[in-house]
Amino acid sequence: MFIKQFYKEWIGAFGQFLVLLSKHVFSHYLNPKFQSFESVKSTFVGKLYVQRGKNAQVIVNLVVITVMVLGVVLGPTLVSNDSQASAVLSGAFNNKFAFAQENLGTGGPEGEFVFDADNVLIDPMTQVSEKPRAEVFEYTVEDGDTLAGIGKKFGVDTDSILWLNKGVTEKRLKPGTALKIPPVTGVVHTVKTGETVYSIAKKYNVSAQAIVDFPFNEFSNDETFALAIGQNVVVPDGEMPDEPISSPRNNIANAITPNAGAVSATGKWLWPAAGTITQYYKPWHKAVDIANRSGGPILAADAGTVIVSGWPDNSGYGNRVIIDHGNGYKTLYAHMSKLAVKAGQTVKRGDKVGEMGSTGRSTGTHLHFEIRTAKGYADPVAALK
Image (cartoon, rainbow, N blue to C red; front, side, top):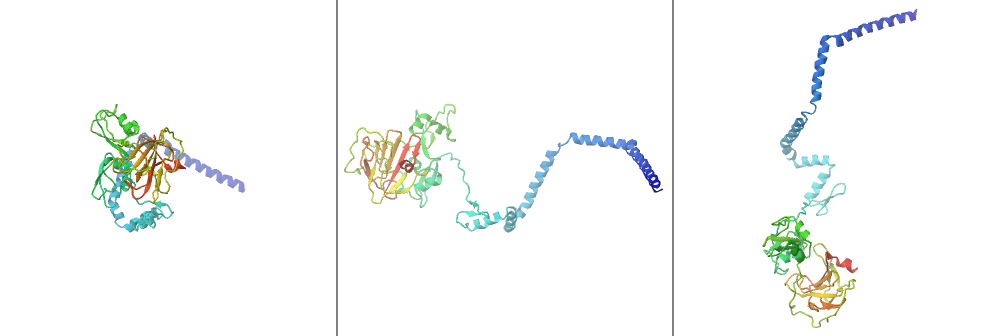
């Protein structure tokens, strides 16, 4: 009895479901009005699909313009209160900005630099571009300036400044003096009749390519690198050729080291003087300084021919000796008080070439010792080890 009743109710409910389903199908899928609506909707959606992304650029531009307008309008309000701005930025950067701002305002816990909360070094100094200058400019010497300090300030060595300012010495360097500063370490050459890039490069012991590659050198013909008479050419890392000495000053030692005759370099360097190293090889000081208050003899670091002995220019190195060792190396011994050799003679390794002194650009008795190669300067301390 119960089962029959159940089936009867189930069959009745299922019949009602079928009736409702048929009504739904007719009203939504068979009704002409519904079919018209679906047709219009499909057409509209199709057009949107075909034109997808058409207005994307317009929308992006509007967003950017909106952000810019908000920045201009609200920017002054945000930064009008320094403490508020600091709070906002410190929150965004985990309080690092506030820490750096506090320390920079007082000079920093280390004086020149400060560290953030993660102990990361913060450099408050402006980063200076290493792009070379285009041309020579004038610098007015200030109180306390030295040639070495000026050279370091502008990224050139002192020789480059001296070559460009004939007659200038450390002793004559007074406040108000106008110095010409070259754009880079090297020589600024004024072109003369018959000179070419190649002859200039040979004169200053550099490659012609180095002159051509300097971005501010100009040529009257870019294909042949022709130069105009009278124009200035920058020779990066150029070396002024040694001037021949007619006769050194009256400071030659009484005992002249005799000519050594035929000699050849051993390739092993000898320490040229006894004393304390007061300055090592650096980009702006391509030598080693050996100081000794009591002076003492200066010895040839290796055998060779003396090509310079004297003080040709009243500045710079002072009394100096340059020895050509015949194997691609030359050595220079500067600031001597007395000379013991003459240009043109030969010396053996260990022969005395002079006495330590403080002539030229020097602040005390010492030897300025350089080792020069065809490729540039060598670190004397590394070579003497």
